[in-house]
Image (cartoon, rainbow, N blue to C red; front, side, top):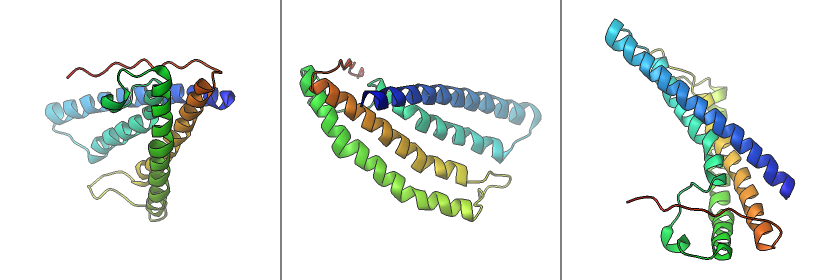
Length: 176
């Protein structure tokens, strides 16, 4: 389990780096599109679409790192003020009963949609738009990757509950 946890942690860090670069690139493209539109009256649907493709990729690449860093959404009523063991149990049950099955279901159900888009060479309905299969393929791949990292987080909780490891459960409740 420890080897799998370390591997997934390393992949999550790489994904987080990829997400940061995707967001930076999306921002630069957005600025470039704005300058081109207002300064030169030039626009392109492809440039607009690549921005949301990059944003989608950032979400899917960055989600496992947010899970690893314990920065994901949770229900404070159940989690806040509990002991470390109770938090680990809540996390383990949430991962096992909600996150991993939900990710598996979305990945399973979205894969045929992405595959059909690839086979049909689906294009954006916008003039000059992009092909759609890459962003559609990001959905099942992103959810599958999140499920695999969820499994690593489940293993991390199991190791902690067995008394064989440490677990950082620092969580700051968002400001209201």
